[in-house]
Image (cartoon, rainbow, N blue to C red; front, top):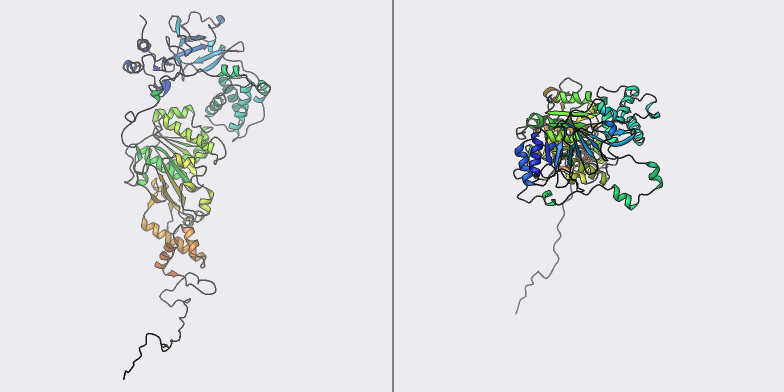
Length: 626
């Protein structure tokens, strides 16, 4: 009697392999049982029984890295005889052979005598276990059942492609700031030349060492990322592409095997199957699970606000030190800021007293190399492992294009953010640019003017905040920096923070320039209502002292108050204007308990003399009757 798939799975675990369920007659992970693919793999017998009880006919996937295995996957038939692998542990596949070895290696393409013959699969990949069934029908069968031994010395080096010389490897020095662009160009040429990822990586690493000026110690991370990005797509034969359109038959042959979708119902959930419980609050009353935008114009303090949020989340302390906005559970923060370099961003982090524990707060700047795409496997794995809150500073640096108003481009960003959430991110916070007009015209902050681009961005987020620096108070840097933060969207109506004013710096008596609250305390200082009212008065007085004839309407626009509020606040200090006259109104002035110099003399109107009433039908006539 043949063994069941559960029994086979338990045998795999007994020899130390980490396995996970694939679909029935499928090479793809079961999305319901193993949502994280081979990262869901386990060698716990109880977990195995649970999986294969739920789906008894599921294929078996082997996580090669955790199982300490390297598998040579030969595309067609047996391994070439000249390699001497006839007595190694072998499994026949649908059209080729898997040869198993002990130990882990790099995953690369295999070449022999200039011909591509398969792949080396190991850490970071998986294969179908013996007795699994290929989508086309054949069963993976053990054909040579010998002990699994290490890879023979020199075998993998022999299977790597020969380095092909190319004139693009030589050339002038590559200046600092152009490394990514030039190495990507060279790598693209090498890819068209027929080279695979490992060979391209080696080549552009050599170019970087010989030609790049001022490359950092982590330059190999940069070249690895470039090579991986270039090789995500197959090599195109450009000569054929220009002269020949593929036939219907060739298109059919190039189509991948259709996945097994017989278990389609498992991709959906009923109401009772959905997760139950309260919405996860990252910061009580301020930030919930999902997606949040923070919009502002350049220089208005987006990154400072972002770091204040990140500090509260990573340490588990109240936002801005206010007890009404606590963080009940500290979480890992991943902060991506490709617009900044290490030294500048480090100074800001140190000012906020950010934690130095990497599992609490980790960042990536341009100093670490090219910015990570949101679908980058390193980023997705970091999110899976940490369940982090991810900050994108700024969102435009993660858009795949240059037109922020392009709806398709913004939808792609939305999809990438959703992928982060699906990978396990509790919340994604995107710092984004506001429209230029919102600041130039001093418009009231709204969702539309504080998030530049198509309306898709405002529609997709769960929360959004707008922030704006008080430019009248700031006075081009000579005055203190204070920021207004306003809640623009609250999808779940969690309440809490609706508006707040935050001071980043202040003026000390006798000093010409402001002093940083953040450097002194590690955080913003919250400006209370009384202080805000005082600032408004100071701004109004400053404006009218600069222009005594400025209209109340213009004062209202510049201070974002109503005309009534402008007149009322100035009246408390004795400032007023007298209406009428040739100029339309007097200058703003204070009377200081003296007669108003612009007051108009009251005209004395002559007293009207009433005329006797005319006879009418109301008058009575006395008639004497004889």
